[in-house]
Length: 507
Image (cartoon, rainbow, N blue to C red):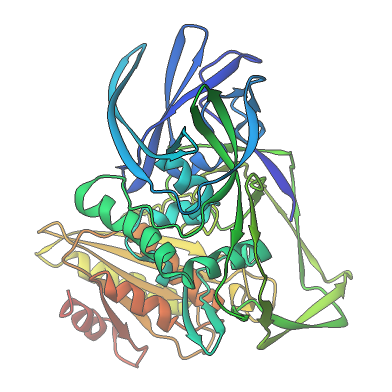
């Protein structure tokens, strides 16, 4: 997987200017996404830049950044990197008011640190640095740590007789099944105090809006970049954590992508070629969600060392065929390699683009009978008195497994989504796909709550593809837990009028 450099697209400083990071704010919600204010300066000029929360993975106080390049920050010469062992030293939580001003802003902030006194020296450790570098040392975990118990959306686990069994769901990107990430998750899951800190941060943030946690480390042995004065050491950046302990002897990893690969001389049915390529990815905080065309950014910035590494076994349960050749029948697709990403991409949950619906009057009936049928049903629904409007979207399924294509192996399989807007403001959605004689129900989604429909609908579509043409029970169950009623509508031989009545009764 190619490594990419990450750059901020809205960088306010001149080319080649060295901007020093002064301060990291605390996470806040904007348009259903966690953001953070960051504060940079060049000489006497100060700028506030709002970024995705998970961008703090790249950022460290008093480092210089040029041209918005986040993962190549430069440390100041007067700072040194030292080993610090504060194991067994009592931590004192300190909170102080703080303010930063610049052109167009004057922000009141709080400084939150844990202070330690060892051998007459005061060590000052920012709480946000412990989150960034120790508890959540990658962007996937940074996105999870501010939420309420969302790790269970990505995997289940059990501990039994010295074995940690992790069952990753398809929501967990297979690119994240690395040695470092598995070990870190095992460290969290097998240490009760670490788990309490990790889960407690999101709970506290949601209930009180405060980024705060208790210091519960049994071992706190770090390598850090520091600012040193007489009898005082300020930790600017934690670059390593030593002597982590995983309290099991073996880790078993399960994931839908873990399959035995069988090579064959058969020709490939299709090949994808990117029309452009480059070594940078622009990170745009104004884009919602994450992309499924996953690119790994350079994120190996923090080193964690373990006392003993358990045996890790990736259990392969499936089988896939890999075709090694091309011939004259292989269809070549040219695709745009989009470079704008959100930093929620790691462990991404939704596609960058939003679902774009259009008015029913602009839709022509599809030549495929099964899609034409649902269009006619939606047109009938729009005539109902308590339905304000019906919009529609036609698209091609995400590219993943064989179900993304029709039986010819070349033509992309299409889906249709009807958006039904009620007079009282509620939104309901009807989903269907090209079936080709498969027994696959339509899905009707109804909710009285305000939910992120864009995320839910994309999860449904990705789940359908990854299950090779079956509605994912895991996805449906997760959606129902959000307060959405999921109703299956079988394709039985009724006329469109009876089908419309059946659907209308559920709204």
